[in-house]
View 1 (tube, rainbow, N blue to C red):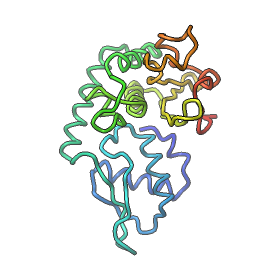
View 2: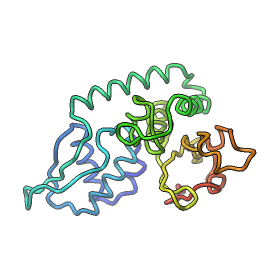
View 3: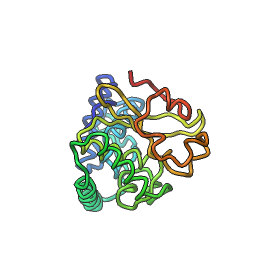
View 4: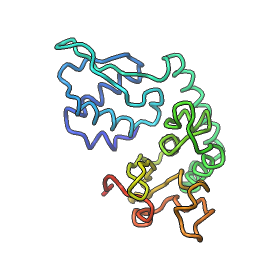
Length: 233
């Protein structure tokens, strides 16, 4: 698990993050949260989903249930517990099979293998869960930026790289997610989505058709097409 976003929360938010994480991984319908405030819950759950690509059966929908000491934080799941467990096993098997074809000691080459595999094997578009999840990308093989980024994050972390999600926009307009990987102490960006030919129009002619145009690039380079919500410094 990455703790990148967790570490940026305040104390009450971190407590909610831990509470929600335990409940969601157990597929609990709700957890006790009588003193929680709505803004704190939203911040904690957002951070949790940014840190945990494997939480594919929960996409952030929640509500308060009950009052007073009986107040609970209830979660909406996109799969039953049995369905989620079966999907988790499928994801594990797919990931292991894929990563077994790479030399895990090869560093950037292994990361590039993951990047190219996603571009070659996952169609860009909405899957069963609107292309937003790890399950969409690895199992149904159809995803948009969020699902692709979660898949890259999951696989890179399995290769023992520090890999996170980043949020921002494309050209200051369209909400977008991509990844950053820490290599030799520096953060470099990876945007699988912009490796697809459908995004050629965003690049000058010399980069059109080049799938490597958004693989391990600096913030300075990425600023030609992206706007960031926050700095990694």
